Image 1 (cartoon, rainbow, N blue to C red):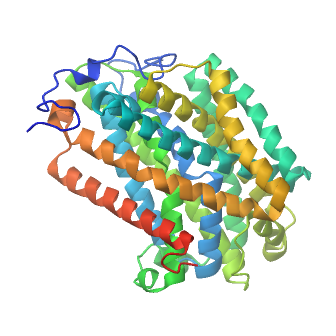
Image 2 (image 1 turned 180 degrees about the vertical axis):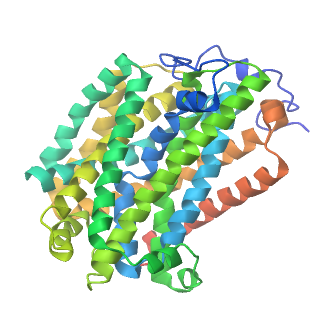
Image 3 (image 1 turned 135 degrees about the horizontal axis):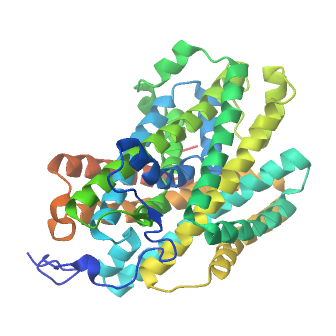
Length: 453
């Protein structure tokens, strides 16, 4: 059958070699994979990209929804975090398959497949999503700087522009350095929350019961609204473009067997990293449930409120500081991966290459300007609303990333022997349609069309 988009019979031989450009060329194939080594040495060589992707699943945009869910409804919405994480594991596995099997990242694959007007439309949407994500990182980092050092939010937003130098330095030193810094910051976040959970002493039975889906989530409109917000904040569209590119930083054998092995190890890497992200998101919700829901502070949703209440509720003077340190690490971590995603998207969709410092400054300026304007005009109380607005923008773009990912990985002409089996197609399309449907409902609720709060 003729594809109306590509105007071809769907048998484009070697479509993945249709362009000579490489994804993220300065780092492509830069990390050697030892041939003939054992399982653990190879797994270590492939470890890293999954953690860089997992950063997007625990960025400051997730904090507001997780805090609200735990404070209002206790442990009940842990099941939503778990289901969202399982969806993410599947989608990131498909990104791994696309990047390794075809040698194209998702943005390049769209450029190869769709006509130019569609490609430009996809690029604009993706840039908006990255700017929205960057906005959440700017605000999250600025809130953390304010809580830790008393720096006004407006100045904190401006200070975050300096992180462009950190990203450029790390990229210059090598991709492994970038991965090492990301993993270190993730471990910092994990350690802070492990201590917080120890202090909060959550009810183990309640936590375990929270991972079992409850019909109440669907029947309680307020709970459903927060649940959809958690889903919208968890699966990040730019991660799909990012992951399909950075898996190609490994120098694996360009044979069917080599690619199959690379897909297996890269999937283990991303699955383990996303389970760590599950711990972080779950920890935020459990902390909110144990500290605020149990003590009658169900109205806590703002990050600043949580910081100020933690010391008193948990009975120690450093609980709030640990919370703010984790937030700062989260914001800076997301900044590092957001930079790469912006580069990959622009180069992939448009085949335009800018100097990294210029690309970074443009992206950061797009995020800083609205943050400074809104906070300057309406006051610092609007920072949490800005975080929520950024997640709505991300939700709008998600379907436009999931749809082509499912389409490309399901076509034998493009994937060859690595094409999705029927059960993966069924699961993947089901996840895609659920994500699109729930995010549409989230948008309608926020617009007040369906009476959402």
